[in-house]
Length: 314
Image 1: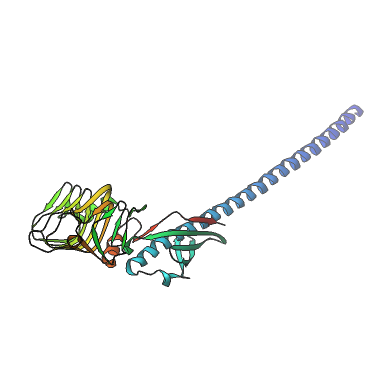
Image 2: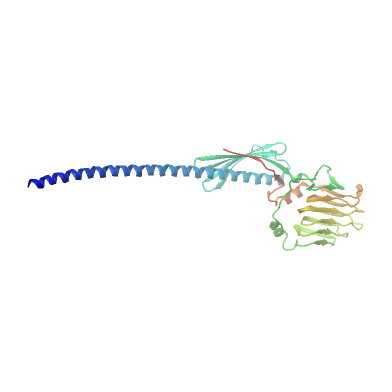
């Protein structure tokens, strides 16, 4: 019987060592699992912070875009931006985010927009200072030269412009269809030309000698030529817009005056007469509302062209 008891004691000691080793192993594994859980929780928290910061920045950037669009919409109705100085607005920018914008008008041609985006308890600030050009402040606005033209008031013109208003061509065509869309050249020979909103010409546009009254806006892909009137005073009320580079607006020599009440926007040259005699030059009477209303369909949504600006994010 004694040998059996001896073996029993030996087995008991071995079991105790194994249990202690197993306990140490379980503690070690538990520590690893706990560390992993802490690490995962910290990483998840960091991801939540990063996501909310990005959402707040996106909200602020959306506020900048909203403000730029709103400023242009204001410029359609008003010549002056100063009433927008210190203007503030809180806008919704998406699910769980919003943005507070503040405007600062810097005379004569700068705007500072501050946008604070919010997501949960996080905020991000984006500031953008922009220089702008008010295209509707000019009766004639051209990327090329302006010659032999009478502009009233005299100083309402801009030549060799570096920036030109842009439109979505598909949108222009959609506005002109179905009755006022001409993909090629167009010659207007009749006396009256009444355009509801917009007449689109893909090629050249020519106004004949017997045409004397036009009402509406004209978007032209080629050149515009106004023929010499046949003892008739020619009048157009609206806007001429030539969107292709190196376009030409040309009025032939007039025995009687041809006149435009509105504005000319040409991506090229504007020539008021084929013979440089002052009394017989094409006359443009500046009308800001007509120009601004036409430019509200532009890519910027109004008469202001925004040049590159400084951006701060913090």
